[in-house]
Structure formats: structure tokens, C-alpha cells
Amino acid sequence: MKVLMLNGSPHAAGNTARALEEMKKIFEKEGMEVELLQVGQLTVSGCRGCGACSGLKKCVIDDVVNELAEKLADADGMVIGSPVYYAAPNGAFIALLDRLFYSSRFDKRMKVGASVVVARRGGCSSSFDQLNKYFTLSGMPLASGQYWNSVHGARAGEAEGDGESLQSMRTLANNMAFLMKSIALGKEAYGLPEREKLIRTNFVRPDLLTEE
Ligand SMILES: Cc1cc2nc3c(=O)[nH]c(=O)nc-3n(C[C@H](O)[C@H](O)[C@H](O)COP(=O)(O)O)c2cc1C
Image 1: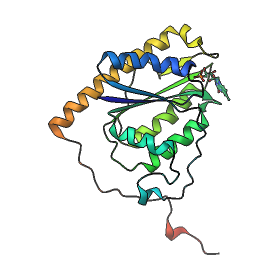
Image 2 (image 1 turned 180 degrees about the horizontal axis):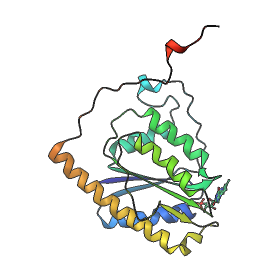
Image 3 (image 1 turned 45 degrees about the horizontal axis):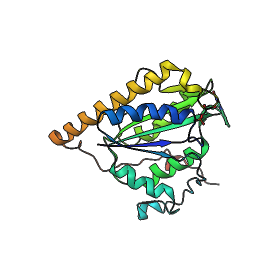
């Protein structure tokens, strides 16, 4: 089983890295193949909204996003971790995730997702909610731990003192490994759930449009 872990902090040895390392150790103990990538330092442009990906099945901006899409296609689980910047995840990381999830058109259902956020003090819950949106739009079940997957620290290394949060990273990783294994068994026994053809109804009522 494979887990793809993305660190959305520009600091490869910062507090987000520390939180993700705690999870990685558990995944490895559980016999999983783990790839932990530092992506928060990359200059990645945001989605242009050009829609080219609907034909290309990948992003028209051919950069790390398309490489990550191949890795995600191959993974059974994904962890995304970010520092909290102004009560939101790192903007550069969000630019990358928007394009990754919008442009990759393969079936992501039943790949397990988990989000982790790291802050000095506040904004963890809003950041956590935002990261989880990528998974819940994609049919990816969320792994949960014993809290809302947050770790506290300001300068690099300070997360070490947040014992409860590091424990919650271990709980999260153990739960996620269990979920991934259980889903693998379920897929073998039942296959993926039935899927309807997508219906898209935008929130526009043509009958209510007024003519100038
Ligand atoms: C631009 C910027 C904005 C930040 N905003 C917040 C914030 O809203 N709330 C908070 O508690 N910490 C905030 N921080 C602190 C970081 O979240 C904190 O230092 C975190 O440990 C950094 O993680 P890292 O070491 O993985 O980069 C901010 C830091 C920066 C650089």
C-alpha cells in the first residue's frame, strides 16, 4: 500500500515536517510505502480556469502538478500538511492543490485522505476545513484521529514540545493505515460503489435572468 505525503510548508525541517514525520514512522511500521515530498517552497502558479484539463486530462501548465497527479493515481492514501498562514493553509500550497485536484480526472474514490495543520496559535480549524474540502469533493474518505489534526509551534523544532499533538499524529496515522487496509479488503470483496453519470446544475435560473 502506498501513501503520498505532501508538506506544504516552505520549511523542509519545520514544524509541519515534524508532524508529518511522526505519521510517516507509523505508516512504515505498518508496512506501507511512503513518499514524503516537500512542495511548500515551490513557486507554483494558481489555476487559470482555462478548462483545458477537461480535454487534456492533465494541467496545461506542465509542471510538478502533473507529476504529483501520477503519484496520486498510484497511491492508496494521501496526507496533506500545511502551516497556518492568516488562518488559512499556505497560499502557494493551495495554488498547487487547486490545480492538482481540478486537472487530474482519474477516479480518486476510496483513496483515504488526511489533513494536518500547524500553527503558532490560531486558525487551525479553518485551515483544516479548507484542506479537507479536496478530499470530500473527490469521494475520498477522511481518516480521523483524536483531535482536529493540528500541531502547535512557532519556530522550527517547537512542535517537539506539543506532546498531545504528536500523539494525535500517531493516532491519525494508525487509524489511516487501518482504514486503507480495510478499504483494500472491501474493494476486493465488493468493488467500488456504483457511480451515476454526473449531473451538473449551476445555481443559475435562466427563467429569472432579466434582459437589459
Ligand atoms: C505569513 C505567515 C502567517 C502566519 N499566520 C499564522 C496564523 O494565522 N496563526 C498562527 O497561529 N500562526 C501563524 N503563523 C505561524 C506559523 O503557522 C508557524 O510558525 C508554523 O509553525 C510554521 O510551520 P513550519 O515550521 O512548518 O513552516 C504564520 C506564519 C507566517 C510566515
